[in-house]
Length: 475
Ligand code: UDP
Image (cartoon, rainbow, N blue to C red):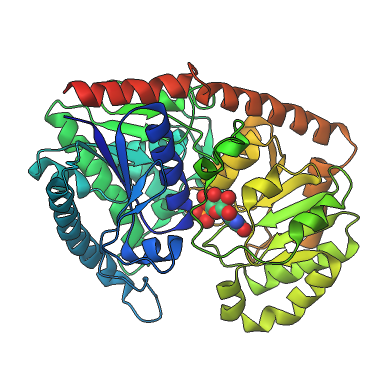
């Protein structure tokens, strides 16, 4: 039977992007059919005007959504976050089962489901349909390793010290850690805590992996990283869970020439890029003279943090391109004055083509919230970073950037805000003429070459992906 991978993902930008890159890479490096599936809400944002039951094709991958019962999107102002888990799980698993039946009827039976790490239940749906499955972990292997140890004996130690961000300890296969370096959901102390909903999703995944391991079917987990980058961390659960690094999954144009296949580089934006002429603005700037600032698609910035940014901008010798999401602005209407001032000092956009920005020669450093996609994108573009981690895996990602020598972590004050003076200090390290910036650029260039090598034909991640496809075909 012809192989058909169904790549299942959550409708958030940081989840859609790596799933899309994996889907296209699978389709291009193998002869397998690939279908990408996100929720109806996400699908409509990716393909405005398309009907929920219509299959979209792009020449490489087919797109067909499932329903998670939040077809107009999850809105915390309307929906109860504590109902999210049960509603999401039951609606999505029923809809996934229907999707599998539909693809059967269309003569396109799915042979393997690759599911996002938040979809622990998808393996059960796959099994009841007689289909293979694998997990797609879209955070670093280091974060997988930390969760793994937390759920295998280290929870007591971590819980006992979770109030002290600077408490230091060791976990196997990981560098020395402080509490602040851990995924923030591990600091969840009660079921009343909003993040307990997300913590539960991770807990369930590790329960599923344990169960499968007990059935002596060491589950495969595809990881969006590469072997050269996280060698020790990938060995965390040797022999139990099979961690298979297949990344970095970033826009192909950042890794290789895609001039002849522009559609292969097509984007899966859930937000419309700002129409402002920010690329022309960048074109007019000298080499390495612009600081790019973005907190990704989810993190809302505190009012005082915006004010500190503006204070820094006012005195900075560097120009800045700053992404501020419209819905965040609306939620914080009182920020308008500060943002207007920021706009007078630099370029403020609502959404940009981040890959194009990071690979532009005018960009000298990236002030980032350390989302894993942004982290990998800056790495493959050889751009030094200033790390302002906010939540989830971002504290760990900031630590990794420091370990790789490509980033400097900005310290927060008592209110959890990075003051203008601290921003200036960090940007100076990443941009200035001192040895620090040159050293960071050298490290960034080295990792860029290794990342490109990993995904090139015959590279470590390319071999892993091909081996995964071959193993899925043989069973
Ligand atoms: N992104 C973009 N334009 C922007 C801001 C972000 O295309 O103006 C993309 C970015 O390139 C990355 C994704 O959105 O691929 C954000 O994912 P990440 O893991 O960095 O952060 P999250 O949004 O999940 O917090």
